[in-house]
Length: 287
Image (tube, rainbow, N blue to C red):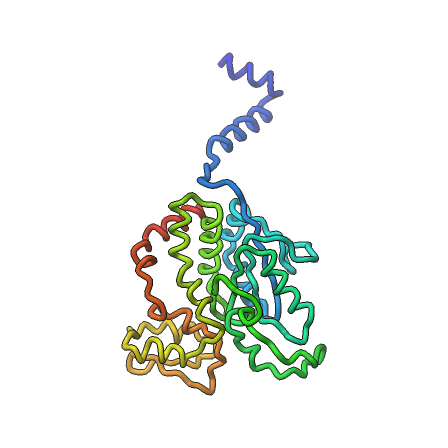
């Protein structure tokens, strides 16, 4: 009791004492992270609908956690007040490149020069998606008529296809990119295994459609009829008939979402054997 009264006198009363006790509790419960350095993350927006950015924002508290503990957002037209592309560890590039827009062409080249890891975020960036069908004639910029996925102009490290990609996939890639750059040796190895299929997609090229799924999966007897391809198609060009996917070629916009989502378009034993550890490390990072 005497000690409590002494603290009250020293701190200046009940209110101040309560504040001191709260601060002590906060300090005592702070999480000790295995790695401390934050990476530099940027979002580069080219020709797209901003749906990928909305999907990224749909991570809500997960996104706040990443920005609080693991990454500094150093560039983003809608989220950061920065005019020119800075040095970045990871660049998330949304949208395709308009060849008639000199600034966009220079931006994607500068992004490659200043980034350690370039991620094609979404199907427009990965495969061109619906922008490949553009014929120009837009009221404000009628000369904008030719669009390419970013992989046709620069080397891309990781693809995250989808129209848009799921919030969870974007979040997981951000966490794994952080561990790949700043984690310990075990974490780097695990992150590399998780990211390898998405890196393989980037190496595969800038084309993706149901025809690729047909030749690489269905015709090889690998399709298990899960329906993931049909669920991922943004224009409903794929339906399930008698347990197998059927594609309408006239509806397909060649966005590559079905191929990237299909669990049999790649078969990576490294990822499968480490699934539980990968799930645990992502859950632990977001606590």
